[in-house]
Amino acid sequence: MEPAREPQTTKQAAAAEPRSSAIKNVLEIPSTVSPTMRSVLRLQRVAGNAATRRFIQRTSENQSRLRRAPDAGTPAPPAPAPDAGAPPPPLSLDIVQVISGPGTPSLSGRVTASALPAGPGETQKVRLDGPEVRVPDTEVGLVEGVTLGNGVSIQVGYTQSVVSSERIALYQPAGGGSAIEVHTELRAARDAAVGDEPTGGRHALSSDVFYLPPGTLSDVHKQDTPRTKMQLQPNPDLFDRPGFAVPSVLGTLPDAPRLVGFKGSDRYIHGLQARYVGNTSLVTLTATHWEVDWTTTLDPTSLAGSGAEGTLGPSAVPPPKTDGEIAALSAGNNWIRFPDVAGAMNVSTRVLLANLGPARANDPASFNNTVEALRAKNPNVGVKILVKSTDSLFGADKLTLELNGPNGKHAEPFKLNDSQEDTAICKLLDLLDVAAVDAATTISVSVVVGRRRSDNTWLLPFPYLRQDVGVGGGKYSLSGGVQP
Image 1 (tube, rainbow, N blue to C red):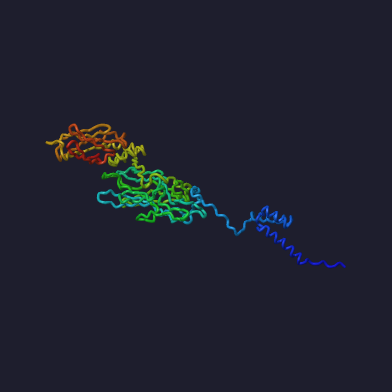
Image 2 (tube, rainbow, N blue to C red):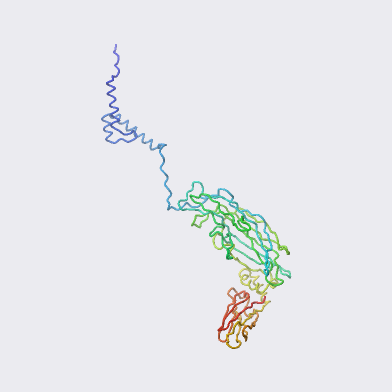
């Protein structure tokens, strides 16, 4: 019988332990780190080739796993900070947005005419107001995750353009016939809220493209509510209310044509728009068109009346004009359309003279009717001279008062002492051809004393003249005008 195999002795187990410990002591590096050549050679001498190959293979596999899947507990490297000198991203609806509110206007009420109070000696006026325009508060902000960068900000506010404006007051001649139309027209223009200045002028409430002062967005102020109210009395909550006033009579004659109604229309485009500060390019968040029809008939006694409601809807285009002259501060094109010569004969000479230039530029038929009425009237031109103190040391001044026009001259001699006066009178057509006059046409009024003279320019439409002049040692006062 074969004797039983003797179990491993304690001596043999003890001999195996030093080899395992020797491997760890030789390397003295983690298994996840590549061994150096020196460590590999020492490992071969102690553990043999087979053990060394297994160790190198296991180390290589561990490093591959680390490259494929980093330790979840290791934080990712921080994202690079935005370049402070880099331009901001192009402005678009991916950058700025409407957070709450419509950002569009609403209209309420109708076109309304009412007589304005008139003081002593003042001509009664009638005011025509459009519907009230309001814009609910609307919050805007940066899109989630957008970063503009240091020092970069966006202005967001409301803009508005007058696309076209035609406002026509209708005056009926006392003797009947077709109505006379007083036109005020305005082409496309920037619109803005305006306020009154203490000195009597008017100014825009926003200094740039916006209708009212805009809101501002940045990385530290990501939301804002642009201003929507003019805050002007008597209706501080209004965004806008277009309107205008005209005299209740046309001219100063006792039977001057009287105001009977209005016609025409205004067209607007309103927008909620944004731009980078310092940049002129605008991005549109909302756009709305709205219109006012001015057609109104007045009550002949109260001069009151009521017209239509306004209309509005979404606009396919943004406000077309956000720079240049402000509509509310523009005089526009103003002229009178006389339907015939008979109609033109119903107004004063001064009204006709003032209409020559504007009618020539805007309405040839009305210009011709204006010219023919002036020719038919051929009014007197009279200038009075008053001697405040004579040039002559002894006795009266011998002087001549001359009226010089493009077509001729009228001169009258006078002998006047201190505090004496006289008047030179001639016909308008003696001095000029009314069909040829323009804005540069003048009448010269001259005082001639001996060889000395004072020439004074009188500009179309030749308003009432009042002027003090001196010739030599004499002092004189001129006054007068064209017969009404």
